[in-house]
Length: 169
Image (cartoon, one colour):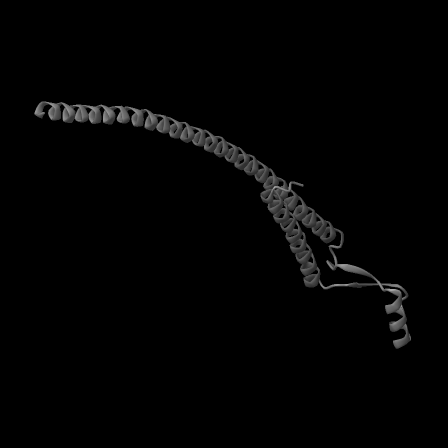
Protein backbone atom coordinates (compact mmCIF):
# COMPACT_ATOMS: atom_id res chain seq x y z
CA UNK A 1 0.00 0.00 0.00
CA UNK A 2 2.78 2.29 0.81
CA UNK A 3 4.33 1.49 -2.50
CA UNK A 4 1.09 2.16 -4.28
CA UNK A 5 0.79 5.53 -2.61
CA UNK A 6 4.37 6.28 -3.44
CA UNK A 7 3.76 5.25 -7.03
CA UNK A 8 0.58 7.40 -7.26
CA UNK A 9 2.27 10.44 -5.72
CA UNK A 10 5.31 10.02 -7.96
CA UNK A 11 3.10 9.63 -11.04
CA UNK A 12 1.13 12.73 -10.12
CA UNK A 13 4.31 14.62 -9.41
CA UNK A 14 5.87 13.55 -12.73
CA UNK A 15 2.63 14.33 -14.57
CA UNK A 16 2.48 17.79 -12.99
CA UNK A 17 6.11 18.50 -13.85
CA UNK A 18 5.62 17.23 -17.40
CA UNK A 19 2.46 19.37 -17.78
CA UNK A 20 4.25 22.38 -16.38
CA UNK A 21 7.17 21.97 -18.82
CA UNK A 22 4.82 21.41 -21.76
CA UNK A 23 2.75 24.46 -20.82
CA UNK A 24 5.96 26.51 -20.50
CA UNK A 25 7.01 25.49 -24.00
CA UNK A 26 3.59 26.38 -25.39
CA UNK A 27 3.56 29.77 -23.63
CA UNK A 28 7.12 30.40 -24.73
CA UNK A 29 6.16 29.75 -28.37
CA UNK A 30 3.09 31.99 -28.00
CA UNK A 31 5.16 34.75 -26.39
CA UNK A 32 7.73 34.44 -29.16
CA UNK A 33 4.96 34.92 -31.75
CA UNK A 34 3.66 37.99 -29.92
CA UNK A 35 7.16 39.47 -29.69
CA UNK A 36 7.68 38.85 -33.41
CA UNK A 37 4.37 40.55 -34.30
CA UNK A 38 5.23 43.47 -31.99
CA UNK A 39 8.68 43.80 -33.55
CA UNK A 40 7.15 43.74 -37.04
CA UNK A 41 4.59 46.39 -36.07
CA UNK A 42 7.35 48.61 -34.64
CA UNK A 43 9.31 48.22 -37.87
CA UNK A 44 6.25 49.21 -39.94
CA UNK A 45 5.70 52.26 -37.73
CA UNK A 46 9.37 53.25 -38.03
CA UNK A 47 9.22 52.93 -41.82
CA UNK A 48 6.01 54.99 -42.00
CA UNK A 49 7.50 57.65 -39.71
CA UNK A 50 10.65 57.77 -41.82
CA UNK A 51 8.61 58.24 -45.01
CA UNK A 52 6.53 60.97 -43.40
CA UNK A 53 9.64 62.72 -42.08
CA UNK A 54 11.29 62.61 -45.52
CA UNK A 55 8.10 63.99 -47.11
CA UNK A 56 7.96 66.82 -44.58
CA UNK A 57 11.63 67.62 -45.14
CA UNK A 58 11.09 67.73 -48.91
CA UNK A 59 8.07 70.01 -48.49
CA UNK A 60 10.03 72.28 -46.12
CA UNK A 61 12.95 72.51 -48.54
CA UNK A 62 10.57 73.22 -51.42
CA UNK A 63 8.83 75.92 -49.37
CA UNK A 64 12.18 77.46 -48.40
CA UNK A 65 13.20 77.58 -52.07
CA UNK A 66 9.88 79.14 -53.09
CA UNK A 67 10.15 81.70 -50.29
CA UNK A 68 13.74 82.51 -51.28
CA UNK A 69 12.59 83.10 -54.87
CA UNK A 70 9.69 85.21 -53.62
CA UNK A 71 12.06 87.20 -51.42
CA UNK A 72 14.49 87.77 -54.28
CA UNK A 73 11.73 88.76 -56.71
CA UNK A 74 10.00 91.08 -54.24
CA UNK A 75 13.26 92.71 -53.20
CA UNK A 76 14.11 93.30 -56.87
CA UNK A 77 10.66 94.78 -57.54
CA UNK A 78 10.97 97.06 -54.50
CA UNK A 79 14.45 98.17 -55.53
CA UNK A 80 13.28 98.82 -59.11
CA UNK A 81 10.25 100.82 -57.93
CA UNK A 82 12.37 102.96 -55.59
CA UNK A 83 14.97 103.49 -58.32
CA UNK A 84 12.18 104.56 -60.70
CA UNK A 85 10.90 107.04 -58.11
CA UNK A 86 14.43 108.39 -57.63
CA UNK A 87 14.90 108.59 -61.42
CA UNK A 88 11.67 110.56 -61.79
CA UNK A 89 12.68 112.86 -58.95
CA UNK A 90 16.10 113.51 -60.57
CA UNK A 91 14.47 113.97 -63.98
CA UNK A 92 12.06 116.50 -62.51
CA UNK A 93 14.83 118.28 -60.64
CA UNK A 94 17.05 118.48 -63.73
CA UNK A 95 14.21 119.73 -65.94
CA UNK A 96 13.15 122.42 -63.52
CA UNK A 97 16.57 123.35 -62.19
CA UNK A 98 15.80 127.05 -61.89
CA UNK A 99 12.69 126.78 -59.77
CA UNK A 100 12.80 123.22 -58.41
CA UNK A 101 9.14 123.27 -57.69
CA UNK A 102 6.68 120.51 -58.18
CA UNK A 103 3.63 121.48 -60.19
CA UNK A 104 0.43 119.60 -59.53
CA UNK A 105 -2.46 119.70 -61.97
CA UNK A 106 -5.83 119.45 -60.29
CA UNK A 107 -9.06 118.52 -62.00
CA UNK A 108 -12.11 119.64 -60.09
CA UNK A 109 -15.14 117.37 -60.03
CA UNK A 110 -18.33 118.79 -61.55
CA UNK A 111 -20.20 118.88 -58.23
CA UNK A 112 -17.27 120.66 -56.55
CA UNK A 113 -17.03 123.09 -59.47
CA UNK A 114 -20.68 124.03 -59.08
CA UNK A 115 -20.26 124.61 -55.36
CA UNK A 116 -17.07 126.63 -55.80
CA UNK A 117 -18.51 128.58 -58.73
CA UNK A 118 -21.55 129.58 -56.72
CA UNK A 119 -19.37 130.67 -53.82
CA UNK A 120 -17.05 132.94 -55.77
CA UNK A 121 -17.11 135.03 -58.90
CA UNK A 122 -13.81 133.89 -60.41
CA UNK A 123 -13.37 130.39 -61.79
CA UNK A 124 -10.58 128.47 -63.45
CA UNK A 125 -12.90 125.94 -65.05
CA UNK A 126 -12.49 122.24 -64.46
CA UNK A 127 -8.71 122.28 -64.10
CA UNK A 128 -6.13 124.22 -62.19
CA UNK A 129 -2.48 123.86 -61.31
CA UNK A 130 -0.38 125.05 -58.44
CA UNK A 131 3.25 124.83 -57.52
CA UNK A 132 4.63 123.50 -54.28
CA UNK A 133 7.66 124.91 -52.55
CA UNK A 134 10.95 123.06 -52.95
CA UNK A 135 10.59 121.57 -49.49
CA UNK A 136 6.97 120.49 -50.09
CA UNK A 137 7.97 118.99 -53.45
CA UNK A 138 10.69 116.90 -51.79
CA UNK A 139 8.15 115.82 -49.19
CA UNK A 140 5.78 114.66 -51.95
CA UNK A 141 8.56 112.60 -53.55
CA UNK A 142 9.50 111.12 -50.18
CA UNK A 143 5.87 110.29 -49.43
CA UNK A 144 5.54 108.68 -52.86
CA UNK A 145 8.69 106.66 -52.18
CA UNK A 146 7.26 105.50 -48.83
CA UNK A 147 3.93 104.54 -50.39
CA UNK A 148 5.67 102.53 -53.11
CA UNK A 149 7.85 100.81 -50.52
CA UNK A 150 4.88 100.00 -48.29
CA UNK A 151 2.83 98.64 -51.22
CA UNK A 152 5.64 96.36 -52.35
CA UNK A 153 6.22 95.12 -48.80
CA UNK A 154 2.51 94.39 -48.31
CA UNK A 155 2.38 92.45 -51.57
CA UNK A 156 5.46 90.50 -50.46
CA UNK A 157 3.95 89.69 -47.07
CA UNK A 158 0.66 88.60 -48.62
CA UNK A 159 2.50 86.31 -51.04
CA UNK A 160 4.62 85.00 -48.15
CA UNK A 161 1.53 84.08 -46.15
CA UNK A 162 -0.04 82.44 -49.22
CA UNK A 163 3.09 80.34 -49.69
CA UNK A 164 3.15 79.31 -46.04
CA UNK A 165 -0.53 78.34 -46.15
CA UNK A 166 0.07 76.43 -49.38
CA UNK A 167 -2.25 78.49 -51.55
CA UNK A 168 0.41 79.32 -54.13
CA UNK A 169 -0.30 82.18 -56.48
